[in-house]
Image (cartoon, rainbow, N blue to C red):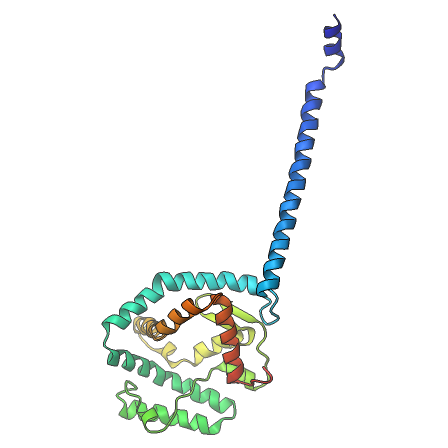
Length: 257
């Protein structure tokens, strides 16, 4: 009789027990999640303190940049590097040299324009003469007669021109497919594309084949350097970033950029 009365007096007892248990477990899970999050934050802070990751004022976009760097590196390791290795191993060295000279001769036109825009009249005239000599006597640029004749090759782009005009480099940026850059150089990239005479080559099929060949040739020239970086760098991303920024600063104003 007493047992019956007790059951009838507390008909909601099972529901209350379940509710209390769920609240207790929920509280425990919340506390556990908070502890894990705090531990993760402390770990990231410790890593950042030791490696300086995420604390470089020149690289405030490091999170995005590392994602793009990994994407580019994966693409390179899977496709571009193997193709470049086959290209290097199969084609005779003089053929590779001729391909590099041919596209380098085309690039000298834009080098000349940028040197003139930067006020480097002598270098600009030098580049114009290189194009004239290599195109005429170097079989359309396959032979670099200009360098042998005492006309050095320059490498100028519109990003350097903007830097000479006083435009600061801005933060470091890793562009998909294109790789290391800065905000200034990123803004200058479309102008560089327009300034490349090969971009006007017709028919389009020939332009695309030439562009692919040009890319593979450039990658093949960097195979040895890439191997050294992979063997020597503790953090490949940081090594490439710092080397790029230092080189770009040296190409414009070492003490100001």
